[in-house]
Length: 576
Image 1 (spheres, rainbow, N blue to C red):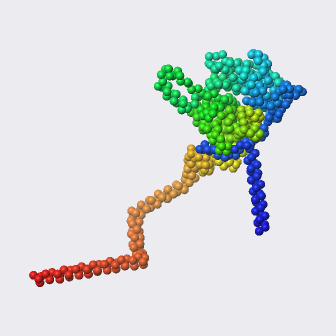
Image 2 (cartoon, helix red, strand yellow; image 1 turned 180 degrees about the vertical axis):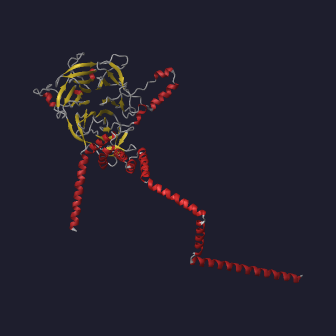
């Protein structure tokens, strides 16, 4: 009894320790990890990323700006904290990070360890004569073939885009200054560039405040070329009503009807192949929320039906049961990493949505929180960059940089997706199995294993995986191959069976012609008649006796009736 009690106590203690460990593990991430199933319902999922660290101004070494003995000294009153940073850029050649520290009106340069190695508060030699930056919101850096380092700054409040040649850790020379275009095509009153992008040909693209015709495009000489990649007008009930009204309205009424305008996109990025990706920050935008543009500015993701692809938390106002709040989606930044994964940042929820090159959702991580002390959550996420397998997110309200690193599950998942997208289904099979062991509801893993089994000729297993993934098309394909394989494996036996049936048919036909089968049947019938059981015979005898008794009784009644009739007739004759 005492031993049993001790075992029970030990078991309870072990369970308590295990529960504590689980709670600690789950509490290590400040966000609820989830994904979407085939019906677009949110389901729990393993975390693909975890919070690695958070860096403030002190952590990245902004104190150097106040140290007179440091080469980066700016002044005794220089801010040692970030202040409303709007943009973050990673230059892969030198492996450096660049920050548009907007409210401090400067550009910061960090090494791969996020330590300050440069600070730029202005540019020398600008044609306008303006040196100081004024709340820059965008930065893009190019390491040219001749070894020169160029920094492109969206100097927002100075209404200019500046191409600067970086000459030292604190100074840069103006190579090109782009101001408001003097062109009949540019009909806007302001020129407030927010985000900057430069392609391989040196063309400059600028996303400007309140410009909904697309990004302003300039060639490498700073000449205005027009607008690039405008969004379409989202088809709403109000737009439909206006279109119907225009059919019946008079000329005077038409003048009073305002034209519908597309929503400007918020940010963009360029991949290694030169395709430009854009995101729209308008709340719950469904039309052209995320686009992949070719050189002509057309969305190659099904341009005729751009709403087929779904990004972030789809739908109108979305209810979050975990926080008891209703929120809208506002996509504020996008980054394409070295492996082609598409990372999209939602400003409202603080979540990052990771997709492969075919827009299949991979994982979701991050969260928003008004508590500025919670590590790994965001209050005003403005930009993200991917480097070294990590995701770096800059917060314009908390004024810090959060680094998310990939979990073991995330590593397996991303490696498997890469092989899957390359058509290497068999090579990805063990990775998919690792993913499925950790997340049994991962549809992507079920599809990957199904494709691997299909490639290996394991069609029955492929059918099971495709069934779990609710992929009818692939299931039908696997079933077709399975049926063909079964026929091939059993062809000899089927041939023998068919041959035997044919021989049997011929033999039976011959036997029928000779009458052998009929005689046999008659003999069997006679045998069946002679083989009646004793009980059946007794029952038949009883029935026969009852029938005879009924017949005798009926005969007696008939005789008595006849005798009575004769007696009556004799009496009548006597009376006569």
